[in-house]
Length: 485
Ligand code: AMP
Image (cartoon, rainbow, N blue to C red; front, side, top):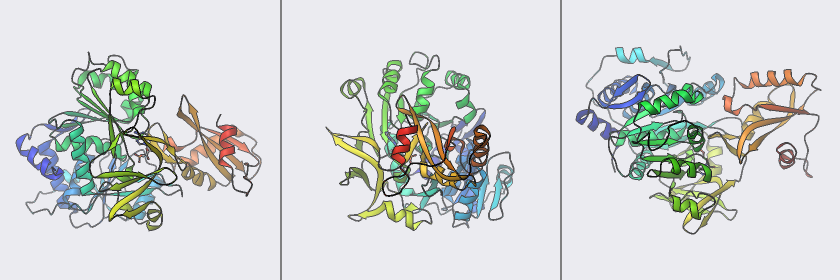
C-alpha cells in the first residue's frame, strides 16, 4: 500500500514541475506543494492539536492539509460557507493552536495563532527532520450536522485515509498522472476522494469553486479548457452538468472515470451519463463520513441498468465488512471506521462500538443485501441529503427553537421528482404572527449566522399548535403528511 506523504515526496523529485493542484489560474506544482507544506509543518510542529485550515478551494488549503500531516497534528478543513458562529463553536471545542487562513479576508482569534499565506511564504525554511504522521494518529476531523444542534467532529485515522485513497486508485485502474476533478467543498469528505488518490498517483487535482457551480457557463468553459480524466462529485452536481452543452464523449475525449458518492445515484442520471459517455467507467460508491468517505462500490454499466430498477451500492471494499441489525440498520465494521466524534464520548458511544476487536459503526442507513449487492433503502433517523449536503433536521429545529417567537418547530423536506426540492419550517409561535412575510424574513436572517445557507428552510408555515401523538410527543409523521405533500 502506498503512503501519501512518501508519494508526494517521490513525485516532487520525479515530476517536480507537474501541477499537483489547479484552481482557475492558480497552480501549485508537486515541488511547491512539498516545499510549502514542509515549511508549514515546521511552523506548527510543536502543536498537539489539529490545525484549522480555512478557505475555499485555494490550492493552499491542500498545503495546509499536507503540512498538518507532516507535522503529525492533523487538520480540520473549514470552508468559507460555514457561518461565523459555527466556526467559533468548532474553535471553542478544539482550542487549536493554529489556524491557517488561506483567504484574503482577515481572520482573528483569541485562542489560536493565525498563519497567513504571506507569513508562510516569508517563513525561513529549515532542514530539521519532521516526524510525519503515524497510522494510528488522527489525520483529519470533519464536522458534520448533529441532531442536538451542535455539529459532530468525525475523526479519521491516517491508516484509514491511506487505505481509502489506495482503494480509490484501484477503482481508477491504478492509472498515474491523471487529471482529477473535485467538486465538493474541502470541508466535506467527498473531496478526500479526489485529493488523496490524485496525490497518490502523481495526478493533478482540478478544484471547482462555488462561483463556477452557480454559473454553469463557467463550468462549460472549464470543461472545454481542461482535459479531465477522473470526475469526483455528488450525483446532484452531475445532474446539473448533464444540462451543459458539449459535455459528452465527442467533446471530452479525455474523460475516463466517474466516481459518485454521498447520495442516491438515480437510474435516469446514470442512463443519461452512459449515453453521453458510452466508454466511461461509472462507479456508484456509498459511505458515511464516519467510515472514511466510501465503503462500497459498484460499476454501473448498461447491463446493470437494464437489470436493476434501482442502482445498488455494490459490495464492500477490502478491509470492511457490512452486516445488518435486527431492524435492518447497516453496520460497518473495519479499519475504515472513525475513531469517534471529537470530545464527545456520549454521542460516540451511541453509534461506535467494537465488534470482534474491530471498530464498528451503526450507520443509520436502512439497507438490504440482494443477489450479491447491497442497497440503501433510506434512513432510520431524521438525517437527509439535500443537493448532496448531509443534515439532521433536528439541528435546524434546535436552532429555530432558540428564537423567541418560536415555541415548537418541525422541518419538513419537500420532495420534487423523488429528491428534496426545498425545506419547509413548520413553526408554532409564542404569539400570533401578523406579518408572515416579515416573520419569515427575520427568522431566515437570524438563522444565517448559525447555519450554512443550505440548511435554512426556504419557506415557513406559522401555526398555533403542532400535532401531537397519543403519548403527547410532537407528531413528525403527521406534520410530514400534512405539509410534505
Ligand atoms: P456523508 O457523511 O455526508 O457522506 O453522508 C453519508 C450518508 O449519505 C449515508 O449514510 C447515506 O445515507 C447517504 N449516501 C452516501 N452515499 C450514498 C449512495 N451511493 N446511495 C445512497 N445513499 C448514500
